[in-house]
Length: 261
Ligand code: ADP
Ligand code: MG
Image (cartoon, rainbow, N blue to C red):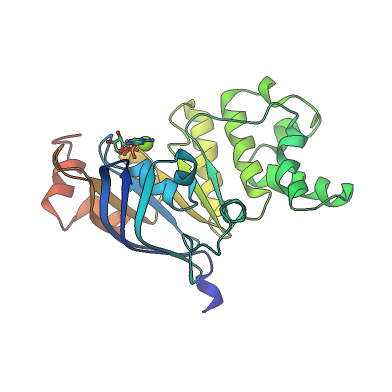
């Protein structure tokens, strides 16, 4: 395998079934390393479902069956040899609602590295500084890293969650509508952060904002559930600029021009 591809995903005919109900079917998609891939589509079209497959968060739900193949760095992430906990240090996640742990800023960030066996204070301090800088939060908090995370604003908490996800040096970051609960200034800071992060990490972002997708992503995948009787499918994936200007599928065009959704 070529090293430059480390951090890329290949999805082959991925389907997801909750209980007996198939939510998503037949998704084949290449997610290039160190670029931003946006997942867009109307509410309920399986964006979160698909995103959760990429670090096996669906495992935690219990009644979920994932079909097809998801390959990360040449490895089928659903094979029995893959430890989902280790996978999640490689493929980090940030949710819609900021969810810092109930502890200090410092302890939030060092939690992951400590479980990986990093104990030296100097090393942990360096991780805290580096990840807070990359998440554009260092300037605001460096004077008081012992502050409880719950005392931060929502936007600061979300940037802390990004720093925490970065602390295990992931190859990929999954972001599920990371700005939808935030003010415009925090949104801007997070979008700027993503631009810088993609030098080092692959980012997959679910967003219901087409404006955000066009600002931050290199490629965009449009998903759609055409009727309640059918599972959702991937309709089109293209370079973002192309998808929003000359989409190849009439359903994509109808969606981006606001005819539904
Ligand atoms: P989106 O993120 O695009 O809004 P979701 O992935 O949340 O869509 O949902 C896709 C479909 O899967 C919906 O029909 C939803 O009801 C169903 N679904 C999502 N999560 C679960 C779950 N934990 N259990 C059962 N069905 C679910
Ligand atoms: Mg969702």
